[in-house]
Length: 425
Ligand SMILES: Nc1nc2c(ncn2[C@@H]2O[C@H](COP(=O)(O)OP(=O)(O)O)[C@@H](O)[C@H]2O)c(=O)[nH]1
Ligand SMILES: [Mg+2]
Image (cartoon, rainbow, N blue to C red; front, side):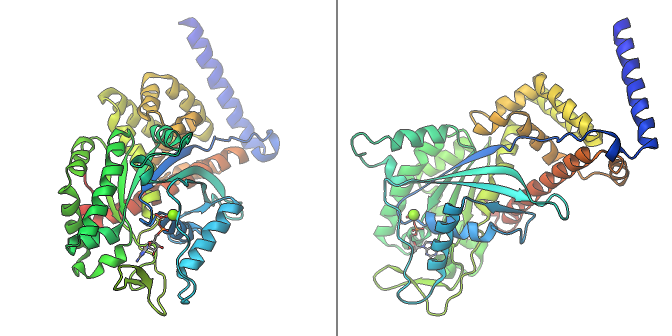
């Protein structure tokens, strides 16, 4: 007991001395500057879809939409080599000259890996900082249903990646859906093939899952009201036993989404008499919702983590969020380490499951805690001005990160608002 009192007294004296010094000197030149850096977590996304379902064009269009901070506070960076490919695909897709055609398809065994860094500006005149990485892995669904070449390890690699996935995206070809709804046997067969390949493996995944309906532009004349269009598609999908059981099994514990997208947007392409998708002369690309599937990844994962907590851990989590909101940056750093070591913090890390993002440990916790915390109050911001440069910049970093996650959540909220049937759970 006595020891504790002595320690408390010493801390109080130190704090008072520090405050006093702050009053006399400009803190910026009286103290050595320490950088308070947090690791940048990586979230893994696995996308699966049959050959020709629209995976590559969705990715190219998504990158084009998110490569600058227009419409949200964040933007994506990729390696120069990936940027080259993504831009090439996009410009070939957007080119309506007859000879341009569509970008070459991906072979069945071919897999594509892209790492996108989500960046944002934390303050004026400061270089944008990375907030998180999204590792996007794209696989052909045929990999799961067709015999592999002897010695091929691609399937094994896919299973490993699914185990660690933070989000799974099943790509459903909207053109097949359209054909099916029009009564074409071909459409029905392809849709069955898609669900047979994708659903069994998505049932086993522990992470949130979304189904993306590509080529949404081709379904435009199904019904004038987009809500009704999606309802028709949802009815069609739930008539499949596999699909229905996935929604039933996962629906209570995590987000299961149905996201209609178009890489090209309305009025750009049509289906010719032979069933091929062709560009219309003088069409212009206006992609629809291509940014939503990736933007939903982190918010959906965080919601799932929170839902997995038991009563005690959830209470402790919200208490920590409230406390953290009142803390100065250095206090928050110290408090986070303490929280991570306690039962609630451990339960939270465990609730991430086999996610690779927890490798960055406290950083992902700090991100999750801040993402539910509110704005800083006026008086807190006044106090912030007394902080050292390093503390100020750490606070700015956390505020910017919270804005990024808010923007991601907003995109998901807009989707649910516009299209209530996009939520299957
Ligand atoms: N109308 C329309 N057609 C699309 C769209 N996305 C893809 N396509 C068509 O589908 C073909 C296959 O797309 P691709 O992205 O290469 O499929 P992947 O094999 O899954 O990567 C393209 O060549 C286009 O003809 C879209 O949003 N709208
Ligand atoms: Mg492809």
